[in-house]
Length: 160
Length: 341
Image (cartoon, rainbow over all chains, first blue to last red; front, side, top):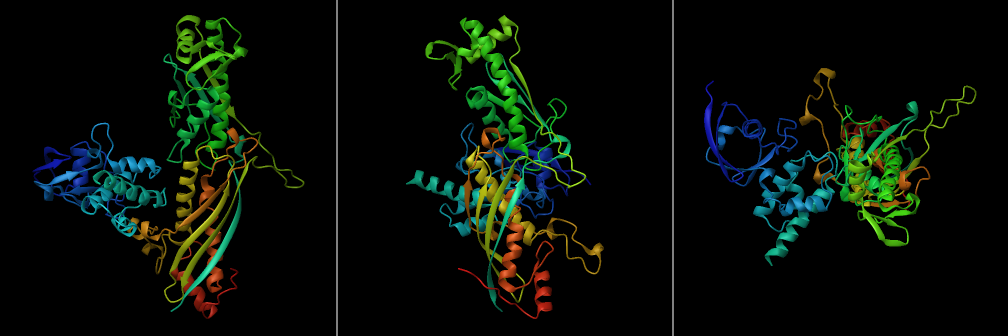
């Protein structure tokens, strides 16, 4: 089939790319645009390592067709840091040892960002629900949950 | 429908490393002309902290700031031989090899510094901040960087060290079967509190309480991280992960991650951990390392807690709701066991 043109914003930059009609957003971001932050895990929407934000909402990159992203704004973990300054979530993940092998981290960060953007002061249960679609093999989740709560608290302190 | 509460415990002795071929690890350490050090290993850091712990051990032994040590791992083409990252052997085996290599490199570093300062190498000490000076005479000093550059460009010396750690192979006595498979054991005890639903077979872990003795915790935060994560994995092995069931035959088994269950962030239980530090005589700075033992005690403790809750002994893993319901049916219902407070 003929390749199709798609334009969207990726971490604030306008990008245009030709995609196969059945190409996934994850494939386009990684192979087409060279942003390797979102990972390919199960490829069937079970593990969450491919989580990216589409217009601020968490989406599974492996199950999202690129052609549905025309005109949208995509965020990946590559766009979190501001130059050398880490995003509060990234800093909190480091501070709280929320990564071991690190493979789930880009997906966890984006699921967490979506949560904090819409709910700056989440409860522990809300944090658990927000990352319920993301599997981590190493940490036992506890450090990740603590990191997200700490990042929320830190953001709150800065606003106050 | 009743949810029966149960408590189970397990204690383990866990061998660090193995007895195959002496289980050797090697390390190479060398200084660069900027006074910083590279540690070359073939050991692999897959998130457990091999790089960090090797870096701490090298910096401590060399007497230089930790920022000045770079650890290069996991290239078996260029690194010295290593048996690998398994058997919870990394900290103990690799750490000891790094100490040997770093000691040799430190010796050459001090010789180079001694030549520049025109003193005896035996009289030199490091301050851990990148300086070398004469013991008791801090003004007679040279930086590690200057000494490294002098060795490289003036004296023609290689500031480098080779290290290997090998425990001689222990053969099995043909008469008694006796052998000494390892030199260091770590220990743990873990208590699980859970509840079992006698209608659905569902098990919910409510709390884990544990004590781990693993030598000196060379990096306490990373030890805690491994223990928290490992206990979760133990819970996953005990209750969740299996390609079963497959009815009526294996062709109908699970085929992918959708059908392979692991506990998610909503299934974790609070875990109180006490780390007991008893430095191991042959460990690097007394360390043994947690490794696999983070997960091991959880499995028998869960099985014991289920017995305590409903009186059935399940001896195959994982303990799925199906196995619990079949066992309850065979037993004619739950028989909660005595529970001490």
